[in-house]
Image (tube, rainbow, N blue to C red; front, side, top):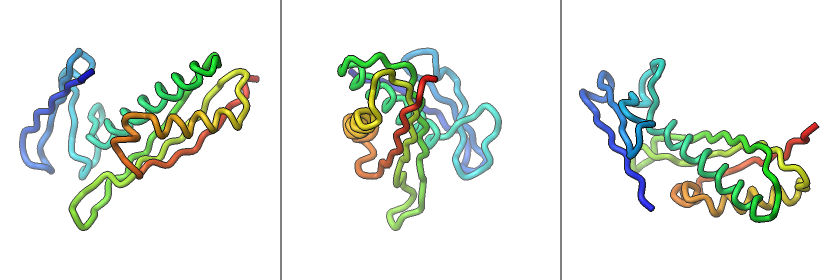
Amino acid sequence: MQSKAAAVWRGGLNEGHGSLSGDNETFAGMPFTSNFRNQTSGTTNPEELLAAAHASCFSLTLSMILSGDEFAVGKIETEATVTLEKTPGGLAITRSHLIVHAIVPGASPERFVEAAKQAEKDCPISKLIQGGVTMEAHLLDIG
């Protein structure tokens, strides 16, 4: 499977602007800016897009693992915080921290954390980030 997206940037880093497009209409004309200036309403940046990709990919991977264990997943909510830092080699994404809260009827906290750790290893975006992923997993009570 392959997915494709394109970005068009016009202007310099500080005053420029860009737009995204993809294989479907979701990103059609979505504006983005550099992360070095204040975000304006309605725009995103590459780091935020990576965080969204990581959070969604992890949620799908965890759902697949739990469903494979015959659990009926009620809800998985994942937040990803991506860190962009200056390194000796230039700017780099150095880590992504995940916080996941889930409602999984019948799952013990131990089994949930085990599944979350497996999802962290199996998630394709986690593999892309290689070694810079940390996670907190919280099983929520339904009641």
